[in-house]
Image 1 (tube, helix red, strand yellow):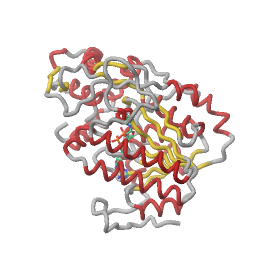
Image 2: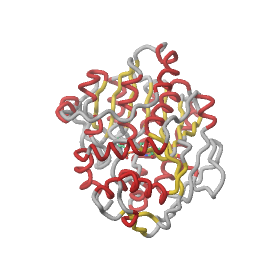
Image 3: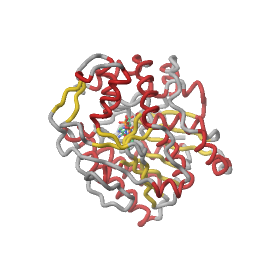
Image 4: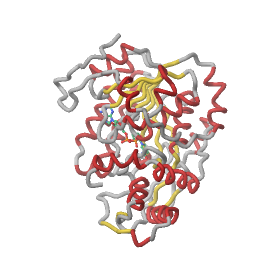
Length: 386
Ligand SMILES: NC(=O)c1ccc[n+]([C@@H]2O[C@H](COP(=O)([O-])OP(=O)(O)OC[C@H]3O[C@@H](n4cnc5c(N)ncnc54)[C@H](O)[C@@H]3O)[C@@H](O)[C@H]2O)c1
């Protein structure tokens, strides 16, 4: 068994704490049970059911599972795929939040465990993979906020590039069968008014964040060519749903509106994003995990392109707040104009498609933030100037 005691890494002063089981402390944190996140469509679990059931009980390593998508994914896979055991590794940056998994220990018991560790720390990753024989690693861990990457890119290199490389190498040495790299459509850069990104579109990242994610993607794909490592890269459009850190557009706008504060909109607000409900993304990742082909890239999108200004107005309308709360602010440096993703390949190959209607999903998400101020209020301090 690997050490669950603290292991200091002198080479990496950023992380002085080692792997430690915090199941007990997690249980302490889990006294409040939040409403379940929006459940993903039963169809996808059902469609995958036969494929999933043939596989014996397996353990999956989820990194960054205390963040927005990772925590939704852990709930999703534990709920929909009963034999799965999940180990969550997260270093708990400002964006990592144990409360995102409130209730999971009570509901799933030993099927879930948590280690506080840095994916860029090879000793810690090695210890984990010595303790468990993982079927798959699903790498959500990342610095994920573009604005922060513009001000301080080095953290992004540390986690998104070095962390991915360490994890990939460790997974290979320990015989992990599958490595899923959770990436983003932002690696493709910006589109004009027409067209969509396909898997073959050239990488053209605009920010340190997207450049670090593109770098990680290349490392992952190269390990397929070099070592025949069973890797997959998934590139998804903008996610929304419960448990998203309040610096991101949708929760930021909801919370500002609830507090009757100005809603800051970059530039003229005409930048376009494609929105996907996080439960649709989780279903897509499960499909890629079990049905995806090694060395392949899969694009996932929500087929819900919306200009930021229109989205903000809809949020205000749903909350019954005036549009006069909108405050245009100087544009983000290197701000991509439009993202749109062609996910037809993934839909065909993985028998998946996004099911959630954006308007309904948005209403449900807004209601979640209205119902859960005790979740987001403590995060406003961490969010700092956002
Ligand atoms: N949010 C989106 O719209 C979106 C869209 C497409 C792709 N993605 C990708 O999905 C993944 C998850 O995004 P998210 O929005 O949930 O991010 P998030 O910022 O909410 O969560 C990231 C998590 O990673 C953890 N983490 C950071 N550095 C770490 C390290 N060195 N070791 C271990 N854990 C570490 C953080 O503590 C946090 O819990 C990211 O890789 C991101 O690039 C996000």
